[in-house]
Image 1 (cartoon, rainbow, N blue to C red):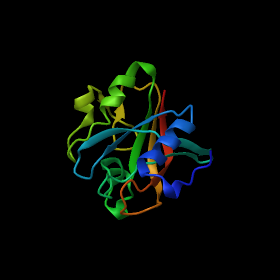
Image 2 (image 1 turned 90 degrees about the vertical axis):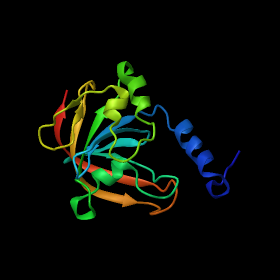
Image 3 (image 1 turned 60 degrees about the vertical axis):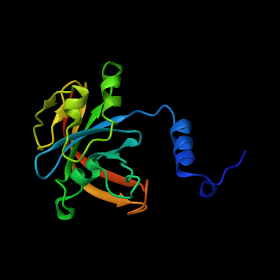
Length: 168
């Protein structure tokens, strides 16, 4: 079978990616807004980039309306209105159910920490909190955002960040 992505609905393209790229770890990314509201959300697409400097990426898609989701709004650089930081919290089996709850859509400024019952722990080098229940957390400073289809529904974004601290 040969498929052309251009001839598939967006939801079917997404299913081909998440069903074909396995195993696929989930990043639980915590951020803080310029106004001090905390957010935590799961991301199917994240990876390590390199070790010199130690760098990670996560990929938030746009909303169905083509606008930025909270994690991107918060993590984008200061020059673009964000805080320029985020924490990648690794999801273990013990917190998988709570992580899934964080995917629920909430109004901007409402905290998924409260919804999922996670504990927001202070970070050392950045303002965004860590998830205390996570076994490994990477505090990151955003270095670059790449937008693959700006303003479009489900358009992709790549947020790259340099790791400043690791909590193990």
